[in-house]
Length: 325
Image (cartoon, one colour):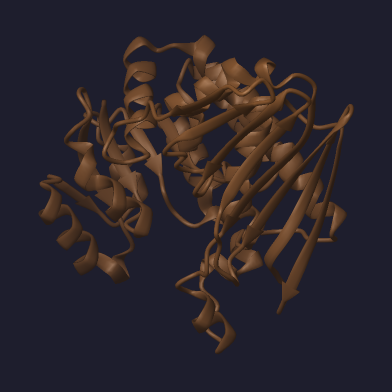
């Protein structure tokens, strides 16, 4: 995979030091804004990335690049992904995939027409610990309650309160607690339980954006509560309770370093299967394999999951009268 990174923000800087550890992945280019050229060039130089672009179309015209990683503000995801697919590139798009279900439907159609890989970058769906949780859920008996929390005092919250609105707190840019942090909880819960029958969201609104909130997902005989907060610290914890026991892990739902199983019969197990140095390593290893094999069945399976999450998020926001973008 010869990857072009579109965006030069925090998530990109966090992952690039680990990209060299992924067999088959070559970061060939990075695309940034003209106004941030110095920053983009410094990022490229520090990671040995040969090409720097400030125009997306120039990047997409490069025949040596086969895949684009979309890592720009949320509201730009759909446009960059669309242009990349039309240029014949595979697309990896940061979470949240897009802001509207119709946008994802359009992107899926373009990928299908061109036999291209289109996938959402969402770390918890590629972790071995999550696969173990999915396989061992039946041991909990009849599920009764799920609680999944991701609370983190945002490094941008103080600036927001003082009047500087950055994309993470800008509803016009697709910001807010649910789409920034809560989406990880939605991915985890829906990845384990499937799409919910009912959805509601109770946010704390501040200057037009949800700085924290609680989403309740309803299933037959089961409720899942997803808490997201950018205006207050954790701790973060997830519990899955059933008639025969509980699964629990401490930490945010995008990492999941270890899972504990406690059953009523006295069984106690602790599982820590993920030993990669960074949470995004497993997903990018899977993306390389998917692109190399042009595995369209895997693409469609992943897209079905992402579509269910996006539909749930949109329904949750609508229940609170929130429309992003």
